[in-house]
Length: 374
Image 1 (tube, one colour):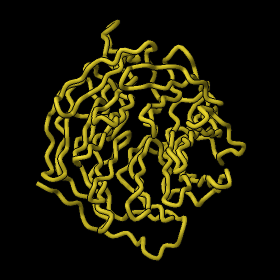
Image 2 (cartoon, rainbow, N blue to C red):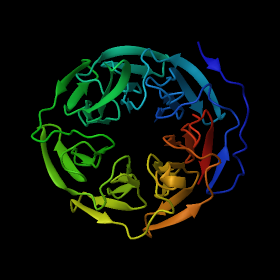
Image 3 (cartoon, rainbow, N blue to C red):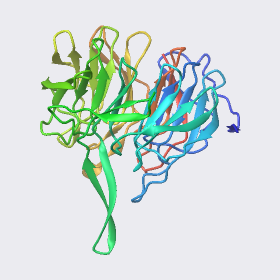
Image 4 (cartoon, rainbow, N blue to C red):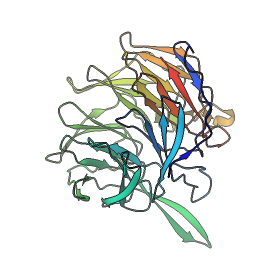
């Protein structure tokens, strides 16, 4: 059954250029560290995440919603059987979306937009969250890193414990099975990025938990061959890696040695080099969004600066900026209507960017969204 939220309309037409316009309709409940997936028909699928990050066991959001850009409305279309947060969502060529991790369970589920149903399709080997998942050219999904979260009872109370996952695996959506990817170097890290390059190899950048802080890995999925190809110019975790039209990666923000950073850099696959960008973002930011626009610019929004507040407290950012790839320059924009951290952003087929969720300085998890009009 499809549940519709009250219909309210955003006035995005005629709003101008390079501006943010708030959506008047809200999602049914707040979400932070959820996933957003652009479906083949142009709608956006929102799944999982948390309604609150408080406590040992955060309150999850099991609603599966779709955002329709044509009407600027939300519809709840299904329910996740498994509560997930900081998980991954992978779009398959057949239109299904595969949910992996973000739960103590190893169950893998698929959402079918043709029927608005979720079904269990298999299992991974190791439960994990904050991992990376990449659809390979052979149709399988490479899964690396992340953390395993468990509760331990000690001295009369429960403690939340975390272990970094060393095992890498490849999940086959056709068979529902996963195989360990045996590599010479274990990808034991969280807060990293993982990008499929044009030659079919996978670049893994940054993150923490591994033996080499700031090291980057190049993985050949077919053979499992993996090697260190260098170090980031700035070691970082919780950063973003955005593929550009010319094949380079734009790597932005994150945390280095416990501090949010303003620096960005390129990875050039033709030269296998990391190249520093001279300019700096207008704000140090981590857990932000970085979205490639149709004209080649990159939109950076929100996130947090973990040193900007009184006594070096975290500050959630409403600021936004554009990186002009042609000039290697940052251009500050009018900010988000609401400061957001650990939110998500999706470029729509018409070129606009749909931004939703996240949390505020006070810890409120948002059920609001806005559109960026290029």
